Image (cartoon, rainbow, N blue to C red):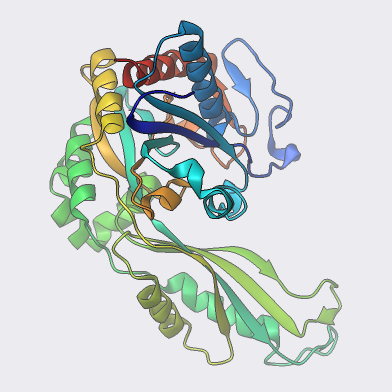
Length: 376
């Protein structure tokens, strides 16, 4: 929708979703089943509901037939779950004129959370960096009945066992410390005191181990991590493969240099026979809170939820927002959802669903937000 001279607002979401194992779902993951309280299905949270909210907001603004103070752009892309190279990255390369004079991007990444009856909202301003790796091994192929002692699979398994024991150092970034401090009152004892004194928390291996059990989403804000996600060797049970490989999903804190992280992983594997290939990596970026979009989200949340905690946050996952930040375009992650732990577990997990209450809240919130930003 064309408007005035103020910097444009871009509404961004991705249409692609991750897969779903039908056998593990209570309802068909692509059935779109609606019951009394929820809409069930893959993508309901990540991130099709955001796209619907944004589209509704644009249509509502168009229906008002008023002059806008800025351009409003709706962008729905593919490929985000696989890295975005055939989505936002492709568009930026082939259609750079689409991204001129943009003042802010509204994307996924933040939301509302309910913990023990207490409500908090996080607005994503930065994220951990992906470092996706493939670890490969080569050995003599053969018959499964006559195994050797140094097959490709054996080399790979030895290396991965070392990687599983390896941990990057704990780091308390200033923004994360502030985030923990603001959230402290929302947590039961002893975590309320520990989050108020986050320096002591990160200095205690025992407390860090307990935090990992208590809340993994908070734990990963304090250290870079690696997860073994894919493995492959022989395609037949009775054949010793000549090659074996694993893919590793590492997520680095924003100040962690990918090259240094890769050096640390090489040292941890300590095996000249393994080949490590980088599949995906990008530079860090952070969006300032002094922006019309961030302020508008924060102000609207304060009006509607005056007692809730509202904080900027770093997300452990990565989104297409990094493409914009790398080009100096501020991007903010916020979906107007309020989730408890069970609902949040559905994101990339089993039985993803969004409450009908959230659908109404999100639609109303987005319409109001966008209208306030785009109308004088």
